[in-house]
Length: 447
Image 1 (cartoon, rainbow, N blue to C red):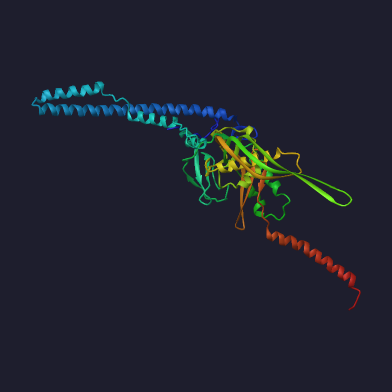
Image 2 (cartoon, rainbow, N blue to C red):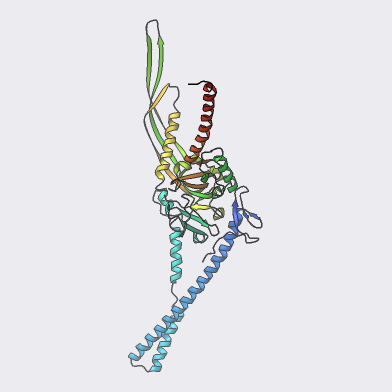
């Protein structure tokens, strides 16, 4: 069995966590730092040793099983030969000799061509190597990007019974509440039937930066409920890797437009208007790389759109080394289900670019437009987001911040009690001033 990967410090065995500011994993005790590649190499060596030991154990177990089976077949052959000799009228001594000859023949040449265990291993290798080329890159991808057993051993899964979110963490990160709905009961689950990410954009901004940004966001908003500005609540902010599908391919489109140039003039008697009409057609294609679509229904699309863009130049090949200290949301919409949204984003861009290529006309309106995305490649990536959920008067409010760039968005309610308080604070002094003016102006008169 593969070793469980907990990412402990090679120097003191303390817990390692990813520090976005320095771009390395850092020990929380001795403060030693390591690059993700160094940690991956270290655990790859450990994994190789574990695999070698497991392979040796399997070979020994297979050899013992085969030897036992061979001995069993030898005993069966001996008994069959003995019974046959007795039935033929030979003496017991002669029958015993015949039985021993049959047993010796089995022991001398009875090794099977392939043991059951070896056949099983060969079958597993065949399944892993199989890559069906269906002509659909999305379907091909979904069929050939699973987690390895070693990765599964290094992760834990949790399910939120309230909103259905499925979260993954490393072995030492605790999950105390759901980042999407705030539910405090998060149940252990099984990590299964899920694809392994291809890429990750590591957290660049740490929790202190996120807390500071949230406080600044709340600053000056005096009508905000105390539940939002409470210090302890703000500290509950969580770093979450949100699942994204990245589509690459070619967008093709054609737009038909009506263009008009209008000229006006006048003489001493009349005003004249001349309108020239033009039929405009634009067609073309564009290459698209990494068109992002959020694969989690729990993360509102409006929030993710608001904190984009992410800098994909900082995207790196996925490694479990980037996960310690953060939650990882499991997609619940696969690449096929999200394909339409990617196509829609590309359609809008292609049509806008084709329209922008038209110039020299006073008025332009679109008569018809059509476009399509020919997907050539799909990838699965984890993108960093700091999140805080708050519930107020039965309504859910979610704060989200891009863990790479710091761009943020948040839903904010208004505390009606505070509104009443501030209205009274303004209204009462105003009434007193009005009363004082009335007394000052009319106080010397008797009605």
